[in-house]
Length: 125
Image (cartoon, rainbow, N blue to C red; front, side, top):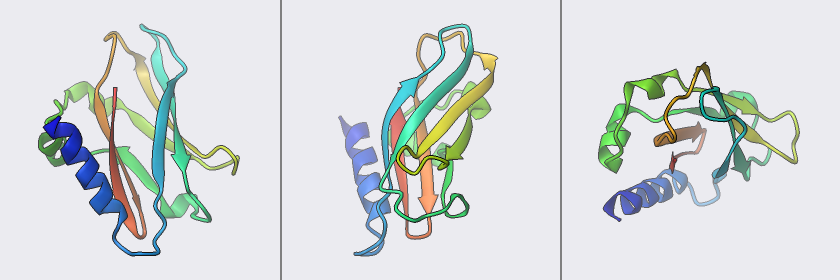
């Protein structure tokens, strides 16, 4: 419970830098691969508005944020790749991939998204 509160508070503070700033949101994750295959998943982006790919950065959160959220940062998570896909304005998303197959039944990780007026963290399993 404390971890979810810390993440929610961090997300709130990160997205309220300016009163009329854009507040990008990270939606649910949709898995498109199976166990023992390279990971392919999509995370829906919410309220991208008129921001461009050059203004939005999506990455695995830094180790300090994992520690603050009390989420274990397994070394394997460093192989996750994040690609911003704004090609379809009605379906902006982040594509998460790995080159090697995933052998664990689940992963737990934090995604960090930065844009000119804010920052957001979200935990995914």
